[in-house]
Length: 151
Image 1 (spheres, rainbow, N blue to C red):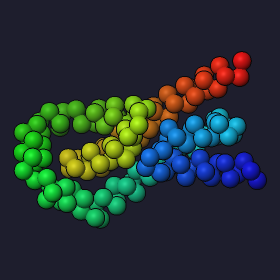
Image 2 (tube, helix red, strand yellow):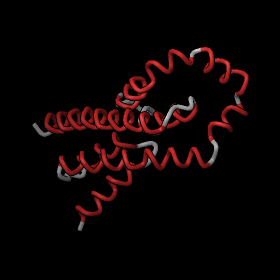
Image 3 (tube, rainbow, N blue to C red):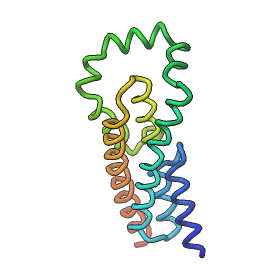
């Protein structure tokens, strides 16, 4: 029963904006849960939240709100650099999401994609691939650190 609670907490942390896949993997491994199950649950939980985040931002007209608040500066800069963004947008989203650093993750990728008005289907694929890479990097790092500490 304690393992089930640990897995549910891991799933909840993977869906939460601040912890995402990175924090949930660290929690799951520190709780001595099955490493492969932790990795799988963390990645799936984070990926499942991506379309939900897109849906929420679209329903609340987030992009329109941002442009109203920062119209003069953001609108001109985005339009000025639109060609550069269009060429590298999926790669940029992938890199931003895959870096296992604080505040860089799926939610940041969704925000960037939504603000710049990119299509959600290609963005979602790039974000999902970034989540997988980030999860694997954190998983391997955390496993290595845990093995070093236990020596």
